[in-house]
Amino acid sequence: MTDLLTTIITSPVAKKAGVPQPTPLRRYEPGAPVCEGPVLVTGTGPYAAQLREWAGQLGLGLAVAPVEGAGTADPTAGATSLNAPNEKVGAIVVDLSDATDPGDLAVLRTVAPSVKRLRPNGRVVVVGTDPAGLSDPAHVATQRALEGFVRSLGKELRAGATANHVLVRGEAWDGLRSAVEFFLSGRSAYVDGQVVRVNDAGGANSDILRPLEGKVALVTGAARGIGAEIAAVLARDGATIVAVDVPAAGESLARVANEIRGTALHLDVTSPDAGARMLEHTRSRYGRLDIVVHNAGITRDKLFVNMDESRWDSVLQVNLRSILRMNEAILRDDGLGEGGRMVCLASIAGIAGNRGQTNYGASKAGVIGLVTSTAAQVRDRGITVNAVAPGFIETDMTARIPFATREIGRRMNSLQQGGLPRDVAEAIAWLVQPGAAAVTGQVVRVCGQSLLGA
Ligand code: NAD
Image (cartoon, rainbow, N blue to C red; front, side, top):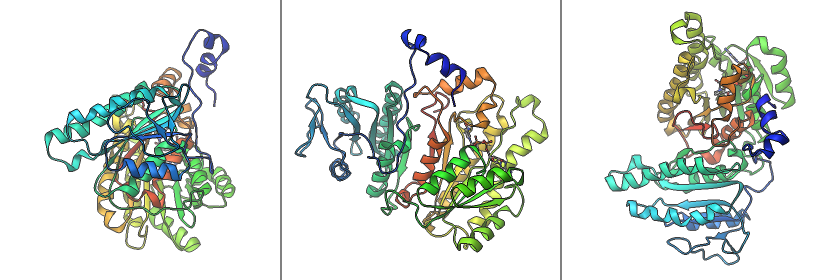
């Protein structure tokens, strides 16, 4: 989708005048390497050696940092030395999960020369320990400092490169590997400046090309926009799809379902029996339900002082109450089974707030509350519940935003462009993988590190 401003700023005249150009993002292609190598794995933490071995197994090639310093030595023979002129690095992973004192953060500075060598669309991932599980003030402060570092570095990187942070809690190697793979890959093209926590729940390795093989996934609001793309991406990754949307969207819903050989279910998510009907449909057709993506959502914007009851109620009903009600049925014993996955669509408006969206912001903040509390309730059953909070994504919903507001929303992020529905879908496709069992109760923003909110 090319907008007027993109046409202007990417014109030859604008390029000649030095107007900053948005970089085409590297997006996931099945079968392609996780990222362009080589990968520099450094830091003093206990996972560095395992991460190096894992990157080697993936055939990414390893790099050795161009300066001497703590944690920069790489014992692997055949690694690319970044001392050589013109050598580039595809990704940098720094494990500082053992850092306990602010002095330990000096290791970060040794990485700076390598950051200069980062390829376009390169990646920086910093591994830390979840401060929520710590008590010593210096230890907590040091680990928390990593978050500030990552978020700031994300704002400095250019040319489609991103910086993200993984926090481990307990014996979290499986979860760490899954999260690092996501952040290095093109699945995270529009995820920048984010923090993801991984716990000790493990997570089975699955088929690289079809990690969702044999799973049945239900996606609401699937007739168009982000929902249609979620359905397509989950189907590409091996899942059988039940695509849900309102009866009025019948034709486009049928098209989406046919293209991916799924089934269409026409229902309004606000109807009292929506959850029961979804279960009945999936059980009678496929005998199981493994993945639920609560994507259906609406906006009815108005300044709060002019907000009428219908705008307020409809947004709260569709975006929030319907999920609570459907979950009563879906999360009952015979609904979503052991190892199930649920992802809800939140929004940065639910984190940062947005003018004219008191109803929408309230509903999406409510979704985040619902996700964190439900995740805790079902954790013992091996079910994960997460939220994905998109920033500015190019869809019919954002095409309706007034021109000036739309252009600001589209540009005000570290990647200087809007995201695609596919970027949201890829983040969801990762969260519902068997390998992501260690990620639950999280909010992953797919916003290019929007300047709105944290
Ligand atoms: P969209 O308007 O393009 O599509 C939403 C779909 O939901 C439509 O097919 C619609 O028919 C369906 N739907 C609406 N009410 C329904 C109901 N009662 N029952 C069943 N289906 C219903 O929206 P989108 O941009 O694709 O957004 C998808 C989700 O992502 C929404 O939850 C939205 O709030 C969220 N989101 C979008 C953006 C963005 O930039 N587009 C940003 C943040 C969050």
